[in-house]
Amino acid sequence: MTLNEPYIMKNFLNEAAPVIRKAVFPIAGLGSRFLPVTKATPKEMLPVVDKPLIQYAVEEAYASGIRQMIFVTGRTKRAVEDHFDTAYELETELERAGKHELLALARSIAPSDMACIYVRQHRALGLGHAVLCARPLVGQEPFAVILADDFMVSQRPVLAQMVAHFEQFRCSVVAVAQVPPTEVNKYGIVEGRQHSSGALELTHVVEKPALGQTASTTAIVGRYVLMPTIFDHLAVIASTQTVGEIQLTDAILQALKTEAVHALAFEGKRYDCGSKLGMLQATVDIGAQHPDVGQQFALWLSERQNQL
Ligand code: G1P
Image (tube, rainbow, N blue to C red):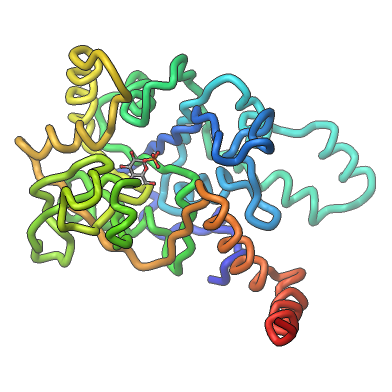
């Protein structure tokens, strides 16, 4: 698969009986790191070349066999709902103009077998709280969580790799990557022992440790497959914690006392599109492989490099 080939029509897992049917997309965050663009535009709608981050994330879930997309949304996020809705005016105009390829492209964003469900997170109480908001929609089944600003490029969708691991071991799975020791304070950091599958079986996890607090540089990066028991842990934290954000990492730490959680070092490249630098890196890499402009852009980049 080339980088820009949409996942949306492909299925990497057994569609007949998917074990993970629902994905939760926490998108209520304010995106203040990208002001001013995020004043009225959701950060999840920022594009890597011509596709918004949230669409890449939804395509990854779809390609992993998931058909129910649950968005935990907030004020100012209407554009996300519109993006996955029918655009009557646009479609009518494209049809009238005979622009069939563009029409198919517009319609492919929301295939007819995909359901988009929205729930509001009324207060900014953190990732754990956002996931807890999805509880009535997820119910008692394992589910995925995708953070759209962790943008993944891989041969096989990262979430599909995790779902395959889940199918085999039936325990929660978090995606991990190595980060520089100076950046551990930006992530959930895991410790564990080697499992026979090659994954790490977690023994400890801590949210944004101070530098030097842990020797581990293995960070959770925006993809989770979780057992529904996580909701019980989140609910306890939500009812007892009086200050600060409710962290998903803290609920995972609680889960470790009674169940296994695996950390999977996936095949693929991750871009931190929650930061300007990561967004620029993703834009250059995807731009250089884009079917329309990739060749020209790559040529321009190398000429520019020679001029510097
Ligand atoms: C969140 C999680 C953190 C994880 C990170 C991955 O943090 O709380 O554990 O490592 O996403 O991007 P945030 O980036 O929302 O502060």
